[in-house]
Amino acid sequence: MVEIAEDQVLARLAKVKGPDLEGNIVELGMVSGLLIDDGKVIFSINVPAERAQELEPLRNAAEQSVMKLDGVSKVIAVLTGERKAGAAPVRPAPSIDQASSVPPPMQAQATRSAAEAPAQKAGVPGIKSIIAVASGKGGVGKSTTSVNLALGLLGQGMKVGVLDADIYGPSMPRLLGITDRPSANGRILNPLEAFGLKVMSIGFLVEEDTPMIWRGPMVISALTQMLREVAWGDLDVLIVDMPPGTGDAQLTMAQQVPLAGAVIVSTPQDIALIDARKGLNMFRKVEVPILGLIENMSTFICPGCGEQSDIFGHGGARKEAENLGVPFLGEIPLHIDIRSNSDGGTPVTVSAPDGPHAALYNEIAERVVQRIDAEGAAKSAPSIVFD
Ligand code: ADP
Image (cartoon, rainbow, N blue to C red; front, side, top):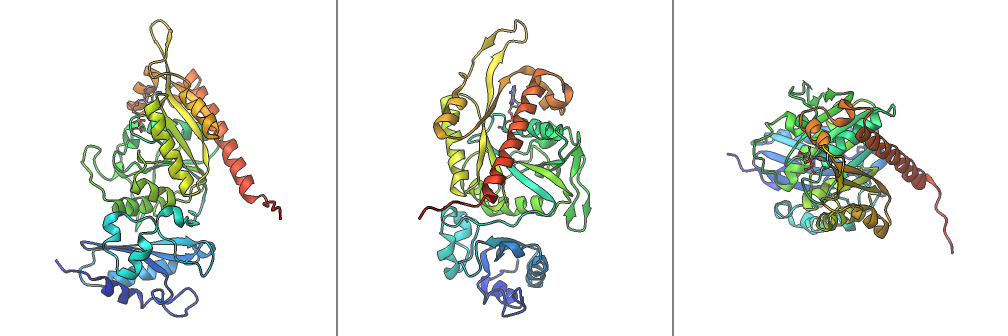
């Protein structure tokens, strides 16, 4: 195997001219986050956020240039947006192994935390709002909620996509009953469709039970490809089903994806709420608005006798949302119909569109739309400054 050295990569990148054909991208300090992993080379090119679309050819040229190196099998260049021209390059929060593989001048930046350098991320053309659905831990029903929320939004006449970013345990193929593989048009993958949703999942490309050990940077490059190299077309909303937890990879993803906001799913018991709080803080760190909290498995209605039992307690998330000053979006009971339909590949909003569960998801979807509008309005409103 041919060893690839960082200075070889930088020398290739130095052949790529800057945005206005002045200097080169290395000399201009635009390259960061260089990672070499076997034959795979990944790096970021920092550009002014408003020029990201126009500079796509530059990204392409950088990839092509590095591809020419002996031993390189794959190159992924990601455009990251700078807050303002001339500011220090903004980079994704690196994982430990990424930090150790970059040259010393970059390493100093690489150890900066995401919190110190929130990036203004380049949007995805055609997609109006990207929303993360996250949870502090697995098994709380995050993916089930993502799908039914997406279908609720679709029911309001929106064009909706779902990106299964739960790279550790993709569940969209199962939840939506999709067994096909996506077709590709050159480098660009075509999303699959289910019940009117456009869907992309790493689970379409590898078997669900394949053990996947993803290191931080690999997760990021897989996500970047699934986000930016998919023919999503025009979407009002893209729901991103995030991996559970609040580790380095999750934080980086929260920072890399141009999110309009995040929805946190929690079960009512305290322990899950502690995790939910961590999830919330993670998004706050990278300045992503919290659209609200959903309590899943909120209460159990016995299908036989109709009696309500609060197996995991009840109302914890509503109370917690109040304490934390974030909106409460609604509660979904623990119900066999939700489980059996979801796991059978037909979400409950599709199998029983007029049933009580679909009504709950639809209400939540309405609240989410209101919250996106409110956040959008708050962003575009002029800020009032008191001297
Ligand atoms: P996560 O994405 O948080 O890991 P999933 O959405 O995969 O969780 O849900 C875990 C399991 O719980 C699945 O079998 C799913 O069908 C079930 N489930 C999720 N929400 C509910 C609910 N409200 N009622 C009953 N079962 C549920």
